[in-house]
Image 1: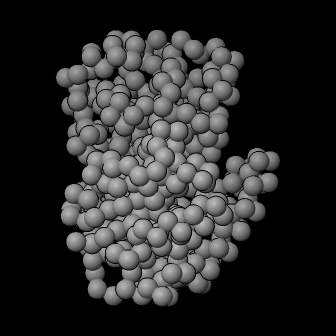
Image 2: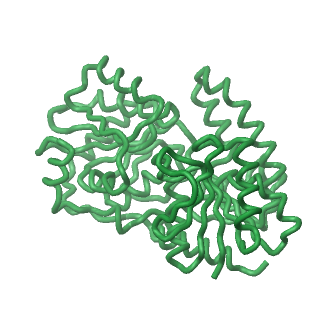
Length: 386
């Protein structure tokens, strides 16, 4: 049995985000495949100290900022690791920079494998912020250069560097990363989603619509993501405003975040409240239900995304997708790439899709993007001989 200690600032218990979902799903996947997985993370309002959740031991550290990486996190997580987990650890699993506080222990413990799971690169984030052409983007971009320097120092100390999608993996093989990363350490393991949970479920359509007060007889356009300026929900709303036959559909936004109030204000200003509905944050089981009865998934992100889970989930349910052209994903006739700032083109594409009959939706997610496949890849990697 491989003893895995995962370091992550947050899990779905902290709030629903892509990184949190991936970390927890992989932990559960490894657990189901026989690994002994233990997680060190930050506290939540409901969780402090040691808990056992779905068969996994999770330690929520009390004296650090919740959901944040900080000096306090790296110091406290190292102290806890040395006290409770070091002696029987086979693999350190770092979600993003989560295990930067313990990476120096590698020298004295060469038998422990150190793996870092990279969700996005500092350089890619830097470019994304510049492309937003906003004051905030320019002002916060130097922080990404700082992180690039930290990554330059730390990446090669890990035994395995895993990119969670083609975008991240591609960044590793381009400047500036190609100049300092040991290519023999790089692997691609794409994010995987639970295809048993996200699937077409049309025989429950009436029940699901009643549950969320969604009008019957209307087609559903869905966006599900964190409500952050870089996620492009503003672009989606401006696109929806251009659609004709507004009485025939409803646009549903799932998620929460710092832009929520601004986006609701935008909807009010545009006078489109009658066909735009905010559902707030939903549990994954709840999101899967709404997604299963949707007709179009819309995601006009401004970012250079690593591998967005929301797109994988939509493809698993068979929903056609209108997506920003800069997002690198598998090819499918059901994924329609558009310029996220060309609202008219996006609106025209949505109208064509709404005209189709989606009664027989089928999953078009390739197997390599399923949780079962991803967990097996991680297990093979951490059990591989040095």
